[in-house]
Length: 259
Image 1 (cartoon, rainbow, N blue to C red):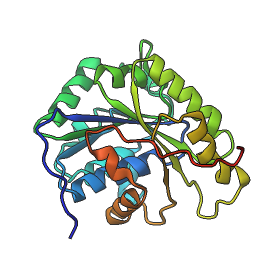
Image 2: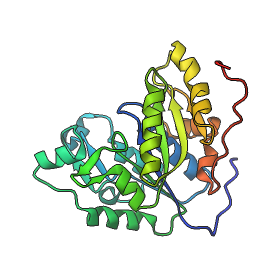
Image 3: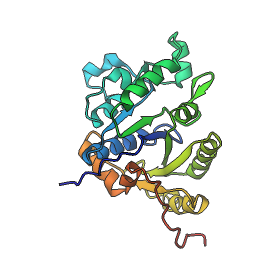
């Protein structure tokens, strides 16, 4: 039996998840963390404030569930989808563009109300963005702005492939200039048969370049529809530390490949 983490009288732990690109496993990691928190007995809520590329009409034909629906299920399935995901747009575009083409404007008041409702009587709130950190929600609001407004600590998810060093460093730089605390960086395995030389060197390189940041590896998971498999991957990757209120401690660099 898995031992539950002790309940804490400390303030709500506010986590935000962003990606360095699209299609790098951000929702998989967010769902895995949420499922693991539930497994540990934590009272967690998860939300995706704005989601694009959602076609509700296809659901009856067995299309994959939306990101927000996955997060809703992982958190226990009790929160109404209207607050887990206040805005959904059909076209797979940046929220600002998708909203404009749909003749709508995303309201910050609506987002704040949904966030506040989900935080009620919870120990952890996890907010997944759309795409990267600077993706615009409106002309004057990016996900960086929203996460800062909600006082979230940032988890950066990055695909372990060529180009990731630049993408991670740019995201860390933007986050910290914007006043966000970067809680962790998670490298995801993006195919079942990775083996490129960049995949073997990126982790050590990031540990050298960002020695004061916690960096994790998240494995390929065949059954991303299985909450137990995702929770096991989170546990095996050491992500339990992200569900505690203490700041994760970076692993000692050791001897790096380019020393």
